[in-house]
Length: 459
Image 1 (tube, helix red, strand yellow):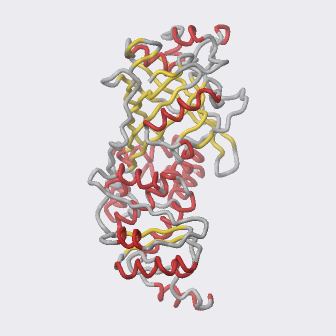
Image 2: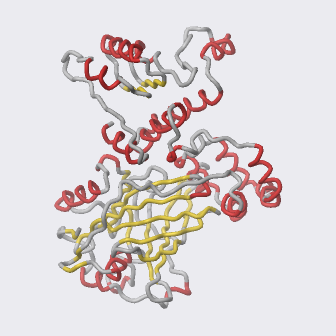
Image 3: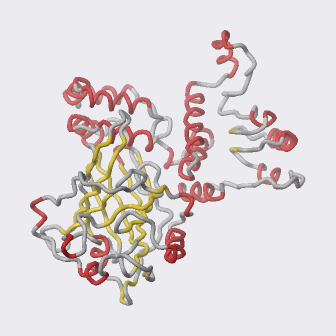
């Protein structure tokens, strides 16, 4: 939970503070004093996994004495579980009322529809149990009951009259086309079931059911007219610095580009039809897809680049399909930094990438990104460990890999391993108009295949 507390602090520059207290193990007596001190002036209380009834009772008494209004408890003894209260909603209240009186039971639990919806949302975040989701769980409570948190503004956001009027007056044709197409209609139905601003749920719907018709509807609804009135900015923290040297020399822009281009080239040269494959990633919405191929390649004009990720999706309908995106890439101010932009299913996303570290033999690299899809009201960040074949680096390299992720504020347990297997049907060809602009990557040629013993990374 200490890592969750760090993410909460990063999410809001005004200085939100989350104090974490771990209970003693091995039968040591509970010292309530630190808990009472942390509760003094607290706005939100969250507890999980307090199963000892004596400890649960003592903590519950301290919370009541402190008068903390917003309380959320999961997987704990009943003395503490019954403490949960969001607004006026108490999900554990009157739990013994028979189910045949469910209408009365719901009324006795109190709370508005917003309170009950928020409880469902935070429970979903809790059950996913990633640091990212747990941070959003805490932020959503602060946003709803304490003060506005920009990073959580979309959570719980509802469709209003203005949004409906915007769709009917400005995107009517695209809406009608979508509801008449079964796959597009299925995508809208799926998205409507997702909690607001739940990026994991929404992107799974989109990648499962994406069609050109949905893209046109989304382009009209969000990008052209912003009918939902959304806004989002890239997360400002953490802000890891890019690597500054590579193979004993100061990093320049062209070398940074060559690192991204990686192993792309002819197989007769010991290269591959892709630049890198993703071994693992940190973002639960975007980095977990199986068989992720990264293809970085140069544009037709000097200093221009493109990035095409090709990844496999296990759709909600039980099918395996390939998806591909097409990013424009331009150099950042410092070598090893890049600005990306993409139109993804009708929504423009802008991202800022850094090469944090890379092995001198190109056997692995660590990249960090932050981004925002403003019209969708979504901000996000993540990091990737990339290798030539999607396998983890040699054990000798893992100390440096761990250090690279640490500079991004990421613990290794937060990473999602990507499933990689031999494939023959991935759409990996370069767009024909760019194929002639490519030249052999001098870094990959010097590395000679990227296999074998680990070599030191540059930072």
